[in-house]
Image (cartoon, rainbow, N blue to C red; front, side, top):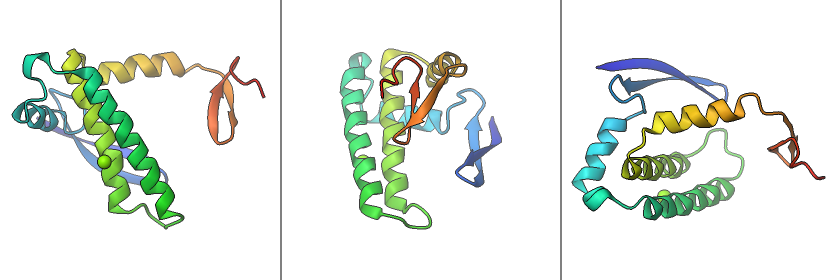
Length: 130
Ligand SMILES: [Mg+2]
């Protein structure tokens, strides 16, 4: 069953479809894709998938930096950001953890975190040695 939710991102409100059985955006489709490619054969390799995630992060940074100040990110930037998500989902599936649970745990940890912005990054209290 599909549910429509609204995603608010950088001044835009967009519709996205989430699957009720798997709350992650396109989670079921991505799981099927990974299965068809053999990514989960013999349990899969989460570390290999996260190495891909690290590569995809670098590709996204390069795409954003190359693009400069466009009014809206190009489809190439969107694609690179999507690659990060896909490879991370594959890693979660290899470990048998629900991606949404990972986000819940991370959010519970950070939601009350105190800190401040340093060089455009949020730095948690105690790590702000500047
Ligand atoms: Mg890529």
